[in-house]
Image 1 (tube, one colour):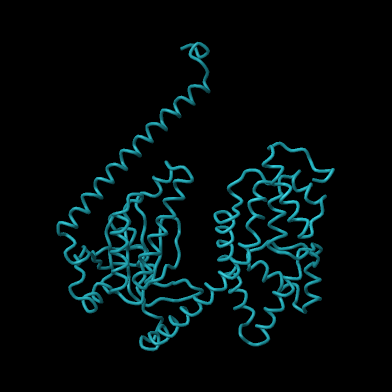
Image 2: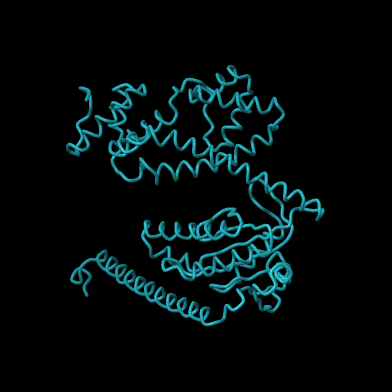
Length: 417
């Protein structure tokens, strides 16, 4: 420990951690003065991440990068913002040799005609938003997590102890997943091309939404770690069921998942599978599912158009534990999987921004047999238990609020009661 190291509490564990971090950061090029200042400012973990994830000194301003690479400064700024980063000041030496290399890679793609500037910027937005989520999940949940320790020295120690293995491994893993997804996207593109040629419009896909019932109310009564467990379980089941039947999860937004499938039968199997899986899960409540079939617009891995809007509206009126489908999807099921599913027509509904539509319930053939009845009974019991728990929590909260309000007003004698 250097002579200028601030005196900090924490005992032998913290001192040993600081010694380990100091050795690693010195090897990465940090001075003792910089390390001591980071300890004093309680940002040693930030210094560790800076040095070990981007092992190259910041020394180029935006103008320097332009002069070094020939890329116009304004284009560099647009690309940087598209990636999701703050716009640097003209005189800020933010960029490193790694950034110079990345700029040259982009220039090579532009010169080869693989992409144009507008497409490159849109791709940068997709990459930036995706990598931001990956980085946050990996840093705050994975090995060397920063969220496990409140002290920056201990957090830095946790990070540096694993960074030598996890940072390169994560880079290789990201490349592997990207290559595999490129392969899968190419296969889907070929099928969509054929479908588009046949239909004369956008590809015809089944689009579905599954919405967890009671999530908003439940989230008000759960601690953060309990809520995270619920959300994690929700996503786990979604990805498992959708992937098992050949669909793709487009995105999850809190208590809702959006998925697509190449045909009506796969979509129905996904929808019914989700309803059954959530209904049988002890941690989660029911979901409502809405699915529509029709032409869609595909852009940057997302889907748009009237079919998506219809599916989104359908899920909003579905009852807990049920699957509602559009008239087109119901007709396709009769052709593609006769006898596998049964449906009941609902009275025609007028949906906002959609108009008057005919919808159908969808369930497995025989879903109302004893097994189905037993599942419904289990759901009802779980709903009743959840309702009792939430009512009890509400009463406890109300009592606590009254006690807090009373303590603020002072003792009875002070109030003249």
